[in-house]
Image (cartoon, rainbow, N blue to C red; front, side):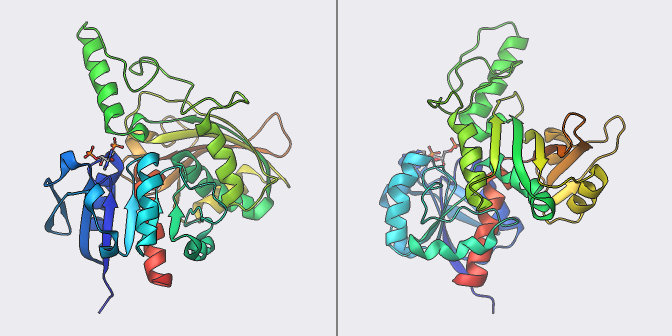
Length: 340
Ligand code: A2P
């Protein structure tokens, strides 16, 4: 009989936590006991997974020695404290926050890109899940990187509000409704109105003028590709979309690749779906194609008219699924299959 595992989900009532529960269900993850964990306010609520109801428990009171794997999505400060407690108790943590991503002894994993690095989880009993924007960008660039090398990546993101959690989804929908009804709006989650607007600022500003979200894409790309020399120039932008991040990516490759060659490579790569007809609507969009789908969609593949070895791509993915919950569960699947 297939071995089953005791799993805890930290932040089980949040936007990512709920997606984790539904994907564990969908993929028939081999669960023996499931421990959904959240704040004391949510304790006692019931969640449904694999045909059973499971009671949410207070994270602060949980005994992590009961779980073999912990899927964490309750924010960086929660992971800073509880991932260490869990790891110490023998529960292997897969952490969705930025807290451990840059630690040299913690693997940072995109299963389509660097699954081999999961083996290093034994150093701290913690594996980090990358930033949502990094994940979809690297899924799309891996086949090109392997085939012709990449010197430099220029990327502008168009990021959905669900990446900031449930409160941000509420902020976009309530601002939109209030504005359409001629009422005043509240601005709480973002520094400016998000409805009918775009905000060129995600996470805190750094000394070099980039934001932390942008620098995450630099640091994480270098770590995951194990390539300190790869150059990344990101601009991260929040847009009034609920689910699905989009990215306009331009790469300068080491040797020339044509759009036709790139399309062929991408079409057979794992986790990618190419939608690229040069006609009205012949491309992927976050709401229509990506939301609730597992794949990273690649469109608008074209050679850069301004640069000999330049290539342009439009890359779209469900930020809550591949950008967070699904990537976490794919890591967990490899972990239990190969290492536990
Ligand atoms: P709760 O719903 O009980 O507040 P989102 O990213 O969608 O905002 O969700 C955040 C998740 O993290 C929720 O499940 C939330 O639980 C959980 N969380 C936030 N703060 C804490 C805390 N102090 N202790 C435990 N869980 C927390």
